[in-house]
Length: 468
Ligand code: MN
Ligand code: MN
Image (cartoon, rainbow, N blue to C red; front, side, top):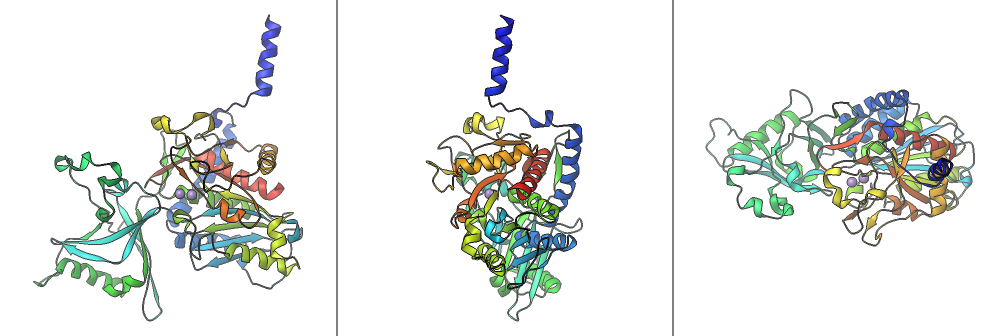
Protein backbone atom coordinates (compact mmCIF):
# COMPACT_ATOMS: atom_id res chain seq x y z
CA UNK A 1 0.00 0.00 0.00
CA UNK A 2 2.67 2.52 0.99
CA UNK A 3 4.76 1.47 -1.98
CA UNK A 4 1.83 2.30 -4.21
CA UNK A 5 1.53 5.69 -2.52
CA UNK A 6 5.20 6.41 -3.10
CA UNK A 7 4.87 5.47 -6.73
CA UNK A 8 1.94 7.85 -7.13
CA UNK A 9 3.91 10.63 -5.49
CA UNK A 10 6.80 10.01 -7.83
CA UNK A 11 4.53 10.00 -10.82
CA UNK A 12 2.93 13.22 -9.65
CA UNK A 13 6.31 14.92 -9.37
CA UNK A 14 7.38 13.62 -12.75
CA UNK A 15 4.25 14.43 -14.71
CA UNK A 16 2.49 17.40 -13.13
CA UNK A 17 3.35 21.02 -13.88
CA UNK A 18 3.14 22.84 -10.55
CA UNK A 19 3.86 26.38 -9.57
CA UNK A 20 4.59 27.92 -6.20
CA UNK A 21 5.58 31.31 -4.93
CA UNK A 22 9.13 31.46 -6.25
CA UNK A 23 10.39 33.64 -3.43
CA UNK A 24 10.03 30.60 -1.21
CA UNK A 25 11.97 28.46 -3.67
CA UNK A 26 15.04 30.57 -4.38
CA UNK A 27 17.90 31.01 -1.93
CA UNK A 28 18.34 34.00 0.35
CA UNK A 29 21.36 34.84 -1.77
CA UNK A 30 19.26 35.14 -4.93
CA UNK A 31 16.72 37.28 -3.11
CA UNK A 32 19.55 39.56 -1.97
CA UNK A 33 20.83 39.77 -5.57
CA UNK A 34 17.33 40.70 -6.70
CA UNK A 35 17.02 43.42 -4.06
CA UNK A 36 20.41 44.88 -5.00
CA UNK A 37 19.57 44.78 -8.73
CA UNK A 38 16.36 46.70 -8.12
CA UNK A 39 18.12 49.61 -6.42
CA UNK A 40 19.53 50.54 -9.83
CA UNK A 41 16.15 49.99 -11.42
CA UNK A 42 14.49 52.46 -9.02
CA UNK A 43 17.01 55.14 -10.03
CA UNK A 44 16.26 54.43 -13.71
CA UNK A 45 12.52 54.79 -13.01
CA UNK A 46 12.94 58.14 -11.28
CA UNK A 47 15.29 59.56 -13.91
CA UNK A 48 13.38 58.35 -16.94
CA UNK A 49 9.69 59.05 -16.51
CA UNK A 50 9.14 59.84 -20.19
CA UNK A 51 10.48 58.26 -23.37
CA UNK A 52 12.82 61.21 -23.93
CA UNK A 53 14.19 61.05 -20.40
CA UNK A 54 14.54 57.25 -20.60
CA UNK A 55 16.54 57.63 -23.82
CA UNK A 56 18.81 60.29 -22.27
CA UNK A 57 19.31 58.10 -19.22
CA UNK A 58 20.03 55.06 -21.42
CA UNK A 59 22.62 56.95 -23.48
CA UNK A 60 24.42 58.05 -20.31
CA UNK A 61 24.42 54.47 -18.96
CA UNK A 62 25.46 53.00 -22.31
CA UNK A 63 28.37 55.40 -22.75
CA UNK A 64 29.59 54.51 -19.25
CA UNK A 65 29.50 50.90 -20.43
CA UNK A 66 31.60 51.53 -23.51
CA UNK A 67 28.92 52.08 -26.15
CA UNK A 68 29.55 54.63 -28.92
CA UNK A 69 27.23 56.15 -31.54
CA UNK A 70 26.62 53.78 -34.46
CA UNK A 71 28.05 54.77 -37.84
CA UNK A 72 26.23 53.35 -40.82
CA UNK A 73 28.62 51.70 -43.31
CA UNK A 74 31.36 51.12 -40.75
CA UNK A 75 32.60 47.58 -40.29
CA UNK A 76 32.42 46.44 -36.70
CA UNK A 77 34.06 43.49 -35.02
CA UNK A 78 33.08 41.14 -32.19
CA UNK A 79 32.66 42.93 -28.88
CA UNK A 80 32.06 46.37 -30.40
CA UNK A 81 29.29 48.27 -28.60
CA UNK A 82 27.12 50.74 -30.49
CA UNK A 83 23.89 52.65 -30.10
CA UNK A 84 21.64 54.73 -32.28
CA UNK A 85 19.04 57.21 -31.02
CA UNK A 86 15.86 57.76 -33.01
CA UNK A 87 14.53 61.34 -32.63
CA UNK A 88 15.36 61.42 -28.90
CA UNK A 89 12.43 59.07 -28.18
CA UNK A 90 13.65 55.60 -29.04
CA UNK A 91 17.04 53.89 -29.03
CA UNK A 92 18.65 50.76 -30.45
CA UNK A 93 21.85 49.31 -29.00
CA UNK A 94 23.99 46.37 -30.04
CA UNK A 95 26.97 44.34 -28.97
CA UNK A 96 28.49 42.81 -32.08
CA UNK A 97 28.82 39.04 -31.95
CA UNK A 98 31.51 36.65 -33.15
CA UNK A 99 29.23 35.00 -35.70
CA UNK A 100 28.19 36.57 -38.98
CA UNK A 101 24.86 38.38 -39.17
CA UNK A 102 23.85 35.56 -41.49
CA UNK A 103 23.44 33.42 -38.36
CA UNK A 104 20.87 35.92 -37.09
CA UNK A 105 20.81 38.37 -34.21
CA UNK A 106 19.25 38.12 -30.76
CA UNK A 107 16.91 40.99 -30.02
CA UNK A 108 15.21 42.17 -26.85
CA UNK A 109 12.59 44.84 -27.57
CA UNK A 110 10.89 46.81 -24.79
CA UNK A 111 9.06 50.13 -24.79
CA UNK A 112 9.72 53.26 -22.78
CA UNK A 113 6.48 55.20 -23.25
CA UNK A 114 3.83 54.86 -20.55
CA UNK A 115 0.24 56.03 -20.07
CA UNK A 116 0.03 59.68 -19.03
CA UNK A 117 -1.71 63.00 -19.64
CA UNK A 118 -0.34 64.94 -22.61
CA UNK A 119 -0.96 68.67 -22.83
CA UNK A 120 -3.16 69.67 -25.76
CA UNK A 121 -1.55 71.93 -28.40
CA UNK A 122 -3.43 74.96 -27.05
CA UNK A 123 -3.61 73.94 -23.39
CA UNK A 124 -3.82 77.06 -21.23
CA UNK A 125 -7.07 78.60 -20.08
CA UNK A 126 -8.63 80.33 -17.14
CA UNK A 127 -12.00 79.54 -15.69
CA UNK A 128 -13.52 81.42 -12.76
CA UNK A 129 -10.17 82.74 -11.55
CA UNK A 130 -8.37 79.38 -11.74
CA UNK A 131 -5.79 78.55 -14.44
CA UNK A 132 -5.59 75.14 -16.11
CA UNK A 133 -3.87 73.02 -18.74
CA UNK A 134 -6.17 70.99 -20.99
CA UNK A 135 -4.88 67.46 -21.53
CA UNK A 136 -5.43 64.55 -23.87
CA UNK A 137 -4.72 61.23 -22.21
CA UNK A 138 -2.13 58.95 -23.82
CA UNK A 139 -2.56 55.19 -23.75
CA UNK A 140 -5.11 53.10 -21.92
CA UNK A 141 -6.09 54.72 -18.65
CA UNK A 142 -8.90 54.51 -16.13
CA UNK A 143 -9.45 58.25 -16.12
CA UNK A 144 -10.69 58.42 -12.52
CA UNK A 145 -7.30 57.14 -11.31
CA UNK A 146 -5.54 60.28 -12.56
CA UNK A 147 -7.27 62.78 -10.29
CA UNK A 148 -6.09 63.96 -6.86
CA UNK A 149 -2.53 62.73 -7.22
CA UNK A 150 0.54 64.98 -7.43
CA UNK A 151 1.67 65.37 -11.04
CA UNK A 152 4.85 66.70 -12.60
CA UNK A 153 5.33 68.16 -16.06
CA UNK A 154 8.03 66.83 -18.41
CA UNK A 155 8.96 67.46 -22.00
CA UNK A 156 10.17 69.91 -24.56
CA UNK A 157 8.99 73.16 -26.06
CA UNK A 158 10.39 73.86 -29.51
CA UNK A 159 10.56 77.52 -30.38
CA UNK A 160 10.07 79.06 -33.80
CA UNK A 161 13.76 80.02 -33.93
CA UNK A 162 14.74 76.34 -33.84
CA UNK A 163 15.83 76.27 -30.22
CA UNK A 164 14.44 73.79 -27.73
CA UNK A 165 13.57 74.25 -24.08
CA UNK A 166 13.49 71.26 -21.75
CA UNK A 167 10.85 71.30 -19.04
CA UNK A 168 10.86 69.29 -15.83
CA UNK A 169 8.67 70.72 -13.08
CA UNK A 170 7.51 68.84 -10.01
CA UNK A 171 10.21 66.22 -9.42
CA UNK A 172 12.60 68.28 -7.30
CA UNK A 173 11.62 68.50 -3.60
CA UNK A 174 11.35 72.27 -3.90
CA UNK A 175 9.34 72.29 -7.13
CA UNK A 176 5.64 73.05 -7.24
CA UNK A 177 3.39 70.28 -8.56
CA UNK A 178 0.10 70.23 -10.44
CA UNK A 179 -2.97 68.02 -10.23
CA UNK A 180 -6.42 67.19 -11.54
CA UNK A 181 -9.14 67.81 -8.97
CA UNK A 182 -12.12 65.53 -8.34
CA UNK A 183 -15.59 66.30 -7.09
CA UNK A 184 -16.08 66.20 -3.32
CA UNK A 185 -18.00 63.15 -2.10
CA UNK A 186 -20.64 65.43 -0.57
CA UNK A 187 -21.82 66.53 -4.02
CA UNK A 188 -21.16 63.30 -5.93
CA UNK A 189 -24.64 61.76 -5.82
CA UNK A 190 -25.05 61.99 -9.60
CA UNK A 191 -21.38 61.32 -10.46
CA UNK A 192 -21.34 58.06 -8.53
CA UNK A 193 -24.29 56.74 -10.52
CA UNK A 194 -22.30 57.03 -13.76
CA UNK A 195 -20.41 54.19 -15.40
CA UNK A 196 -16.77 54.10 -14.25
CA UNK A 197 -15.68 55.21 -17.74
CA UNK A 198 -17.60 58.45 -17.30
CA UNK A 199 -16.98 59.17 -13.62
CA UNK A 200 -14.22 61.45 -14.86
CA UNK A 201 -14.69 62.41 -18.49
CA UNK A 202 -11.83 63.05 -20.90
CA UNK A 203 -12.46 66.78 -20.86
CA UNK A 204 -12.41 66.77 -17.04
CA UNK A 205 -8.72 65.86 -17.01
CA UNK A 206 -7.65 69.46 -16.64
CA UNK A 207 -4.54 70.22 -14.63
CA UNK A 208 -4.81 72.97 -12.03
CA UNK A 209 -1.83 75.28 -12.53
CA UNK A 210 -2.59 78.57 -10.76
CA UNK A 211 -4.96 80.73 -8.77
CA UNK A 212 -3.26 84.08 -8.20
CA UNK A 213 -3.89 87.01 -10.56
CA UNK A 214 -1.15 89.27 -11.87
CA UNK A 215 -0.60 92.11 -9.40
CA UNK A 216 -2.36 95.41 -10.21
CA UNK A 217 -4.14 93.92 -13.22
CA UNK A 218 -7.86 94.14 -13.73
CA UNK A 219 -7.94 92.76 -17.27
CA UNK A 220 -9.31 89.38 -18.31
CA UNK A 221 -7.53 86.05 -17.67
CA UNK A 222 -5.24 87.61 -15.13
CA UNK A 223 -4.42 84.30 -13.36
CA UNK A 224 -3.47 82.68 -16.66
CA UNK A 225 -1.41 85.76 -17.54
CA UNK A 226 0.44 85.51 -14.24
CA UNK A 227 1.32 81.83 -14.81
CA UNK A 228 2.40 82.59 -18.37
CA UNK A 229 4.59 85.41 -17.06
CA UNK A 230 6.32 82.96 -14.70
CA UNK A 231 6.86 80.46 -17.53
CA UNK A 232 8.18 83.25 -19.75
CA UNK A 233 10.62 84.41 -17.09
CA UNK A 234 11.91 80.89 -16.43
CA UNK A 235 11.82 79.33 -19.91
CA UNK A 236 11.46 82.24 -22.34
CA UNK A 237 8.30 80.78 -23.84
CA UNK A 238 5.07 82.45 -24.95
CA UNK A 239 1.62 80.87 -25.27
CA UNK A 240 1.98 80.13 -29.00
CA UNK A 241 5.04 77.97 -28.23
CA UNK A 242 2.78 75.27 -26.77
CA UNK A 243 1.75 74.60 -30.36
CA UNK A 244 5.17 73.05 -30.97
CA UNK A 245 5.70 71.29 -27.67
CA UNK A 246 5.51 67.79 -26.25
CA UNK A 247 4.60 68.18 -22.61
CA UNK A 248 3.59 65.17 -20.57
CA UNK A 249 2.07 65.20 -17.09
CA UNK A 250 3.06 62.12 -15.09
CA UNK A 251 2.73 61.10 -11.42
CA UNK A 252 5.25 63.10 -9.40
CA UNK A 253 6.04 60.44 -6.81
CA UNK A 254 9.22 58.42 -6.81
CA UNK A 255 9.68 54.64 -6.92
CA UNK A 256 9.33 53.13 -3.46
CA UNK A 257 9.52 49.73 -1.86
CA UNK A 258 6.09 48.20 -1.37
CA UNK A 259 5.20 45.66 1.28
CA UNK A 260 6.36 45.59 4.86
CA UNK A 261 8.85 42.98 3.67
CA UNK A 262 10.10 45.36 0.93
CA UNK A 263 9.58 42.59 -1.63
CA UNK A 264 7.95 44.78 -4.27
CA UNK A 265 8.35 48.17 -5.95
CA UNK A 266 5.57 50.69 -6.47
CA UNK A 267 6.18 53.25 -9.20
CA UNK A 268 4.81 55.08 -12.18
CA UNK A 269 5.65 53.52 -15.54
CA UNK A 270 6.86 50.00 -14.74
CA UNK A 271 5.11 49.19 -18.04
CA UNK A 272 7.53 48.94 -19.69
CA UNK A 273 10.67 50.34 -18.11
CA UNK A 274 10.59 47.19 -16.00
CA UNK A 275 11.61 45.27 -19.12
CA UNK A 276 13.73 48.06 -20.63
CA UNK A 277 16.11 48.17 -17.67
CA UNK A 278 16.72 44.40 -17.45
CA UNK A 279 17.23 44.36 -21.24
CA UNK A 280 19.92 47.03 -20.93
CA UNK A 281 21.60 45.37 -17.98
CA UNK A 282 21.68 42.03 -19.80
CA UNK A 283 23.19 43.72 -22.86
CA UNK A 284 25.81 45.54 -20.80
CA UNK A 285 26.93 42.16 -19.40
CA UNK A 286 27.46 40.71 -22.89
CA UNK A 287 31.13 41.02 -23.81
CA UNK A 288 31.89 39.00 -26.93
CA UNK A 289 28.63 37.14 -27.55
CA UNK A 290 28.34 34.43 -30.19
CA UNK A 291 25.54 36.25 -31.98
CA UNK A 292 25.07 40.00 -32.23
CA UNK A 293 22.80 41.09 -29.37
CA UNK A 294 20.40 43.97 -29.89
CA UNK A 295 18.21 45.94 -27.48
CA UNK A 296 15.51 48.21 -28.82
CA UNK A 297 13.70 50.61 -26.51
CA UNK A 298 10.72 51.82 -28.47
CA UNK A 299 8.25 54.66 -28.16
CA UNK A 300 4.51 54.72 -28.95
CA UNK A 301 3.72 51.14 -27.89
CA UNK A 302 0.90 52.37 -25.69
CA UNK A 303 -0.88 53.91 -28.67
CA UNK A 304 -0.34 51.08 -31.13
CA UNK A 305 3.36 51.37 -32.07
CA UNK A 306 2.57 53.76 -34.92
CA UNK A 307 4.69 56.78 -35.81
CA UNK A 308 8.37 56.95 -36.71
CA UNK A 309 9.51 56.22 -33.15
CA UNK A 310 7.14 53.25 -32.71
CA UNK A 311 8.11 49.73 -33.66
CA UNK A 312 5.81 49.77 -36.66
CA UNK A 313 8.52 51.99 -38.18
CA UNK A 314 11.60 50.46 -39.82
CA UNK A 315 14.28 52.05 -37.63
CA UNK A 316 15.06 48.78 -35.83
CA UNK A 317 15.20 46.74 -39.01
CA UNK A 318 17.25 49.46 -40.74
CA UNK A 319 19.76 49.29 -37.89
CA UNK A 320 19.97 45.49 -38.19
CA UNK A 321 20.22 45.76 -41.96
CA UNK A 322 23.05 48.30 -41.69
CA UNK A 323 25.05 45.96 -39.44
CA UNK A 324 24.30 42.96 -41.66
CA UNK A 325 25.24 44.75 -44.88
CA UNK A 326 28.53 45.89 -43.38
CA UNK A 327 29.29 42.16 -43.11
CA UNK A 328 28.12 41.47 -46.66
CA UNK A 329 24.85 39.90 -45.49
CA UNK A 330 21.44 41.11 -46.63
CA UNK A 331 19.19 42.58 -43.96
CA UNK A 332 16.50 40.17 -45.03
CA UNK A 333 18.72 37.16 -44.42
CA UNK A 334 19.85 38.48 -41.04
CA UNK A 335 16.29 39.19 -39.92
CA UNK A 336 15.00 35.86 -41.10
CA UNK A 337 17.58 34.06 -38.96
CA UNK A 338 17.03 36.35 -35.94
CA UNK A 339 15.18 35.67 -32.70
CA UNK A 340 13.48 38.17 -30.47
CA UNK A 341 12.13 38.51 -26.98
CA UNK A 342 9.34 41.06 -27.03
CA UNK A 343 10.02 42.22 -23.50
CA UNK A 344 6.79 43.54 -22.06
CA UNK A 345 4.74 43.18 -18.92
CA UNK A 346 1.84 40.85 -18.27
CA UNK A 347 -1.01 41.05 -15.78
CA UNK A 348 -0.15 39.51 -12.42
CA UNK A 349 -2.93 37.47 -10.84
CA UNK A 350 -4.71 39.75 -8.38
CA UNK A 351 -6.67 37.86 -5.67
CA UNK A 352 -8.72 41.03 -5.16
CA UNK A 353 -10.16 40.65 -8.66
CA UNK A 354 -9.92 36.90 -9.09
CA UNK A 355 -12.92 36.62 -11.41
CA UNK A 356 -11.18 38.21 -14.43
CA UNK A 357 -8.27 35.77 -14.28
CA UNK A 358 -8.04 32.12 -15.16
CA UNK A 359 -5.75 31.06 -12.39
CA UNK A 360 -4.12 28.08 -14.07
CA UNK A 361 -2.93 30.32 -16.91
CA UNK A 362 -2.16 33.60 -15.16
CA UNK A 363 1.23 34.83 -14.08
CA UNK A 364 1.73 35.46 -10.38
CA UNK A 365 3.84 37.86 -8.35
CA UNK A 366 7.14 36.13 -7.43
CA UNK A 367 6.54 33.43 -10.02
CA UNK A 368 9.50 34.76 -11.97
CA UNK A 369 9.70 36.14 -15.49
CA UNK A 370 6.52 35.37 -17.45
CA UNK A 371 6.66 33.91 -20.94
CA UNK A 372 3.52 34.80 -22.87
CA UNK A 373 2.89 32.68 -25.95
CA UNK A 374 0.17 34.97 -27.23
CA UNK A 375 -1.63 38.16 -26.27
CA UNK A 376 -4.57 39.73 -28.13
CA UNK A 377 -8.29 40.01 -27.59
CA UNK A 378 -11.23 37.66 -28.13
CA UNK A 379 -9.97 34.85 -30.41
CA UNK A 380 -6.30 35.94 -30.00
CA UNK A 381 -6.99 38.84 -32.36
CA UNK A 382 -3.96 41.09 -32.74
CA UNK A 383 -1.56 38.51 -31.37
CA UNK A 384 1.71 37.23 -32.76
CA UNK A 385 1.33 33.77 -31.14
CA UNK A 386 4.80 32.25 -30.82
CA UNK A 387 5.33 28.80 -32.27
CA UNK A 388 5.57 25.73 -30.07
CA UNK A 389 9.08 25.24 -31.45
CA UNK A 390 10.23 28.69 -30.35
CA UNK A 391 8.51 28.31 -26.95
CA UNK A 392 10.44 25.07 -26.45
CA UNK A 393 13.68 26.77 -27.48
CA UNK A 394 13.20 29.61 -24.99
CA UNK A 395 12.02 27.23 -22.28
CA UNK A 396 15.15 25.14 -22.71
CA UNK A 397 17.38 28.20 -22.35
CA UNK A 398 15.61 29.45 -19.22
CA UNK A 399 15.73 26.03 -17.55
CA UNK A 400 19.40 25.56 -18.40
CA UNK A 401 20.30 28.84 -16.68
CA UNK A 402 18.14 28.33 -13.57
CA UNK A 403 15.88 31.21 -14.42
CA UNK A 404 12.69 31.21 -12.36
CA UNK A 405 9.96 31.54 -14.98
CA UNK A 406 6.29 30.93 -15.55
CA UNK A 407 3.90 30.86 -18.46
CA UNK A 408 0.91 33.16 -18.46
CA UNK A 409 -1.78 34.75 -20.52
CA UNK A 410 -3.43 38.08 -19.86
CA UNK A 411 -6.66 37.01 -18.19
CA UNK A 412 -9.89 35.11 -18.74
CA UNK A 413 -10.98 34.52 -22.31
CA UNK A 414 -13.13 37.47 -23.42
CA UNK A 415 -12.41 39.47 -20.24
CA UNK A 416 -10.58 42.08 -22.32
CA UNK A 417 -7.21 41.97 -24.00
CA UNK A 418 -4.08 43.76 -25.04
CA UNK A 419 -1.08 43.61 -27.32
CA UNK A 420 2.64 44.20 -27.49
CA UNK A 421 5.26 44.96 -30.15
CA UNK A 422 5.69 41.23 -30.93
CA UNK A 423 3.62 41.29 -34.11
CA UNK A 424 5.57 44.20 -35.61
CA UNK A 425 8.83 42.31 -35.23
CA UNK A 426 7.31 39.02 -36.35
CA UNK A 427 6.32 40.89 -39.52
CA UNK A 428 10.01 40.80 -40.53
CA UNK A 429 10.10 36.99 -40.38
CA UNK A 430 11.73 36.99 -36.94
CA UNK A 431 10.83 34.38 -34.29
CA UNK A 432 9.29 36.32 -31.40
CA UNK A 433 7.81 35.57 -28.02
CA UNK A 434 6.64 37.88 -25.25
CA UNK A 435 8.53 37.74 -22.00
CA UNK A 436 8.46 40.11 -19.05
CA UNK A 437 7.43 41.05 -15.57
CA UNK A 438 3.98 40.42 -14.03
CA UNK A 439 2.45 43.70 -12.85
CA UNK A 440 -0.32 44.54 -10.39
CA UNK A 441 -2.47 47.62 -11.18
CA UNK A 442 -1.08 47.83 -14.73
CA UNK A 443 -1.52 51.29 -16.32
CA UNK A 444 -2.50 52.86 -13.00
CA UNK A 445 -0.44 55.85 -11.82
CA UNK A 446 1.13 53.49 -9.25
CA UNK A 447 1.98 50.06 -10.61
CA UNK A 448 3.46 47.23 -8.50
CA UNK A 449 6.03 44.57 -9.41
CA UNK A 450 8.07 42.02 -7.47
CA UNK A 451 11.81 42.57 -7.16
CA UNK A 452 12.46 38.88 -7.74
CA UNK A 453 10.51 38.95 -11.01
CA UNK A 454 12.44 42.02 -12.24
CA UNK A 455 15.72 40.28 -11.51
CA UNK A 456 14.60 37.05 -13.17
CA UNK A 457 13.71 39.05 -16.28
CA UNK A 458 17.30 40.29 -16.44
CA UNK A 459 18.55 36.73 -15.96
CA UNK A 460 16.21 35.50 -18.70
CA UNK A 461 17.36 38.09 -21.22
CA UNK A 462 21.02 37.48 -20.33
CA UNK A 463 20.50 33.74 -20.83
CA UNK A 464 18.86 34.42 -24.21
CA UNK A 465 21.77 36.63 -25.28
CA UNK A 466 24.21 33.89 -24.27
CA UNK A 467 22.39 30.91 -25.71
CA UNK A 468 19.53 32.16 -27.90
MN1 MN B 1 3.74 47.35 -22.24
MN1 MN C 1 0.92 49.04 -21.52
